[in-house]
Image (tube, rainbow, N blue to C red):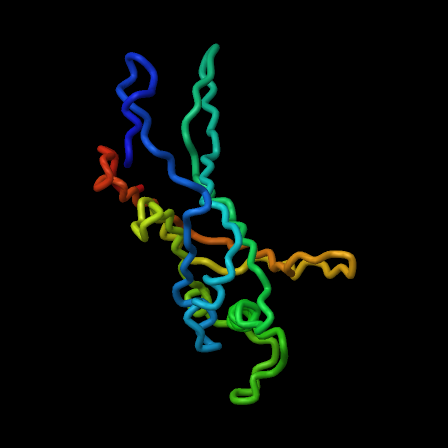
Length: 196
C-alpha cells in the first residue's frame, strides 16, 4: 500500500497506509444459472453495490457459583445483499431468472421430462459461488472473498415510477454456506496476509 510518510500518529508508526476504496470492487458469479447456460458475466457487469460477508457467533453463557463466563458457540453468516441495474437487453434479468429456474422451476413444466414446479434433488444442483474482489485501482486484487454454497434467497424487482428518471434496479439477497477471506495486499507494502 502507498504510505503518506509526513503524517500519522506519533508513537504509532510513521505514515498512513492508503485505504481500500469502496468503489474499487468487482463481483464474479461462478456456476450461476447453469441450466440457462450462462456464465454470470452479464450479471457481473450490472452490479451497482454489494455487501461484504458478515459473521456472527452465538454466545454461550456458562453459569458458575457466583459468576458467569462466555464462550463462542456456532457461527452464522448473514446473507449478502446485491443491487443490480436492470439493463434494457434483459441480460442480467435473464441470469437471475435462469438461477431461479435452476433452484425451482417457476415458469412452468419441463416438457423434456414432464416435471411440474420441480426442484433439484440436492442443493449442489443449484448452488453457485460468488467472488467479491476489492481492487487497487490498477486491476490488482487486494482482498478476495470466496463465498461458497450460494443461492438466491430473495429477489425484489423493485418499483416503477412515471415521475422518476433513474435506472430500474433489482435487489438480490444471497444466502450462502461459508466464506473465505484472502488478504492479498502484501505486495503493496503491507505485512498482513493470510486467509480465514
